Image (cartoon, rainbow, N blue to C red; front, top):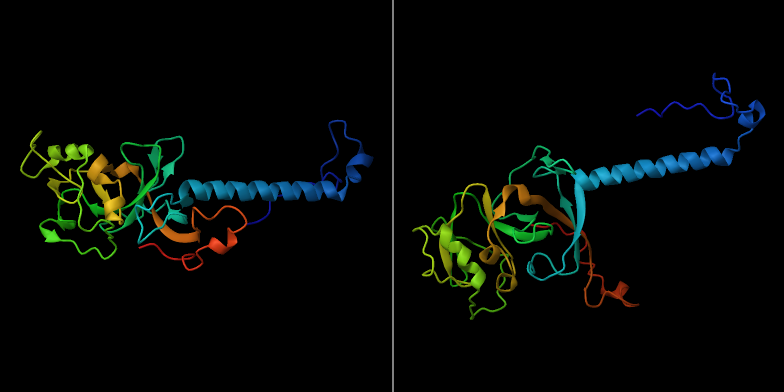
Length: 257
């Protein structure tokens, strides 16, 4: 790209001084002023490029909880590809064309329905039209057992009941059963995912608040795909003089799958 044309205040161009500027002062403007203007222009350009990248291409996020442990750890810092699913144009309520559609098994960043201003990271396990159920911690999709090598179970022999799971009754395969459907953390469904909705689960399956509890994710709320861990440290030990020793060097640069 060619540099913008400039006419220096020293009169090196063809323009005559005007507006009351004295020729002697124009010819003798100090070099430091030109250098300062060039530096300011470079900084402004860099900030514009950074803002454009953050708005449309890549954004950084920090993982605060252990709900994806096994794949992501609390204290991981991620770069997220925002362009892949169609980045939002700030302030306009519009999205750029998507480069790809969300797929089963991908880790995604999204706005959850109960906290639409926050970003969550989970694994996409159910697409529109899928039938999902869980039996004794095992996930089934469209009648087939889903192989989940990434899933962890911190409570292998227990189960738990949560009142928030009652929403599933409206989407049961055999039809709504209000008051008679008794889902639990490890045993629920089968439910049918409606159009333009997605079902997500945390990889740390027994310690994750996800679609089982607060419901389905809208397509327009899926914001991006995590790409790489660019920094990681033990969150409870990262402050103070020992921060450098607590960096998880083996996680830095790891791709997210």
